[in-house]
Amino acid sequence: MKIFITGAPGYIGGTVAAKLIAAGHQVSGLARDDDKAAAIEARGITPVVGTLDDLDILDAAAREADAVINAASTHHAFAIRTLVGALRGTGKTFIHTSGSSIVADNASGAQSDNIYGEDSPFTPLPEKAIWHAIERDLILPAAQDRVRTVIFCPCMIYGTGQGVRSESIQIPLMVRAAQEAGVSRYIGDGENIWSNVHIDDCADAYLLALEHAPAGSYFYLESGEDTLGDVARAVGRLLGQNAAAQSMSMADAVRAWGPPMSLSLGSNSRLRADKARAMLGWTPKGPPMLDDIENGSYREALNS
Image 1: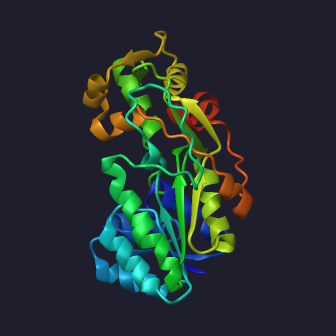
Image 2: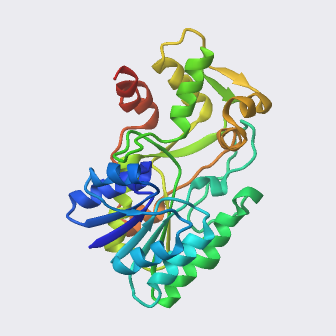
């Protein structure tokens, strides 16, 4: 198949692209400049130079492809509308990447018992409402216009990716912050929980969806869960820090990590990926996240 990927240099998009190429597919990818284009071309991806604001470029690339994967933005409504529109009436596949912060709360480190399956109702936080609207009002209904739409909603992703950008966001941020402060930190009580999934398992689901997902599908992706306090303690052990991981206030977290990430790392986002397992035959195989932090890819990166 000919597959066009937005976010091809990125953590998710680059890993998906590498697996698609290994499986024999032809992959083209959006690159914002010549440097990124050269970087993805070296990985076997045909570059399409442009940004998500270049709607004519997106439209042409989507029309030439057999399937389109959006791994660049959860909420660029104009780009997503253009990509979906280019596929209307064709029966071709459009896979969209969301994220489980769509069901996150403002817990400031407190634990929540709310666990979401794909059909569980929820009300997104105001800052995530556009994600929900785009998914429910733009992407999924396009299945009625002969677009094979599929949405993946992964949770906290960990491990080393195969893209130009090989790191995720959350754990490397916590590692760097702990190195700078001399101590690993969590927000409030650190009892808030995030589900998690290894990057290779996440990317494998995309390949399975190309083969098996029905139109109008929505899949959560997770293979475990941990409290953010436990994540912080694992980071501290990774760095060999003598001091135990410490609590910090939300105000201190905002100063250290910035508002969006501090709100995220103080929240709960708990999922169950029952549909992906049942409908796609998805079977996660990656190491547990805390093991990967202390003894796996994060230690390898630290020692490299």
